[in-house]
Image (cartoon, rainbow, N blue to C red; front, top):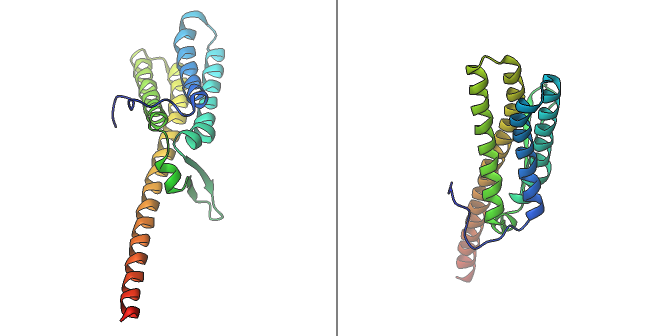
Length: 183
């Protein structure tokens, strides 16, 4: 992944990008600032987790679909097994996705988890089990989106490879058939 955003492109969906970043920043900022200004742990826990849950929902159901063309969910089948489901745009639409939107999506997704890990380390060092619980919930939501979208992206690449292989094979077969029918 490139550290710099793609040059010369504007965001195709600036409002979606704004909300994609807003709830991440709000959860992180509230967690940091609440320790300075709020003494009630229950309020800190509820508001921080609520903001992280809003971020999870926005990323999973809105910004993931619009900014990178991916959607995932997990369901339990009749046998009680967990089954991952993935959706992605068709290959032509994926190829037209805005690179800057995609860059913002992936970097903020991973960077947020890294920040929550840093907060977890600080909570461990300071022996604050209650704050470690808050960070643990937020980190779990963040990692769930990372795992879901990473698996979805890999599934989309497999679909692209399968489509390319099928297209090449069918064209090769039709070329051979037309060569023999012409004879």
